[in-house]
Image (cartoon, rainbow, N blue to C red; front, side, top):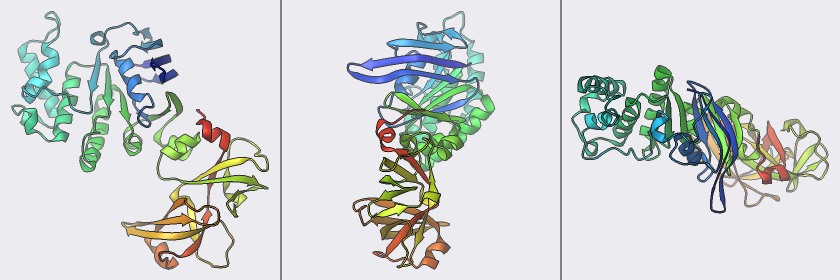
Length: 368
């Protein structure tokens, strides 16, 4: 089933939860709605499900206006963050519940229900727990049972609201991998709400970045990470170093130093001399120069070096007009060893790439 939301608006009192949002969710795609708390992603999910009504706009399912259609008639499966399993029912009865609640004319026979439940429990690899109660399961197992229950009614759309939010990091990672494989097998149109950037980038076919009730950017995980369209997206996805400055000739003056023009990239055309800008660099886009006579990049002081795994992270504090700012550089362990960095050492940060936005656009959170 394809989904389109058109000019959806929703207010809660004076708070604008959704501001004329228009989005398409193609058949069979797994799309992540990603953004900070309060950005409108769960409200949008609930409006698509029919659990919430929009103040204006349309929800189209396979091209038909479903805005006035009751939630029971939308053929939507919903998975919540906190499982919502019936504690007094066994795993088997939880999964069977939706099928048993269908109108008599549509209700499968008990044999059909039994066969379907075991098929779904095998799909989520938990058939051996059919006679257990939710309290006897781990968090990850409970969430897989909740997903099996959502699939039992054969939904045309699967909606997941922070489904792994209550789980620890290791279990979350395992379930992300499992959910992606499950989607590849079933190809149900799915919308996945999360505030976890790693989760969205790892699981989704496409990512919708939301902020303050609107859409900032839409694209594949690769597109939104490699080519952020706005300052908000740049700052929200992954670790990032932020430099506040002014255009100085072809470069950008930050404090008492000037960032070199050969590293600057921007998409807003010519930047006037003196224009206030913000520049972003990922930790791997900064190099460290230990030459005490160097004037390249900007001055900083090493705060600490964290060396584990194949990479090392160097944390630094700003000096010379960037006091109070903190920076992060990602290097190989070999690079750190060859540089001989020590806590408190004065160095220069030299960017290989900087994405520059005018300060006005950055403050407005301009949307794609």
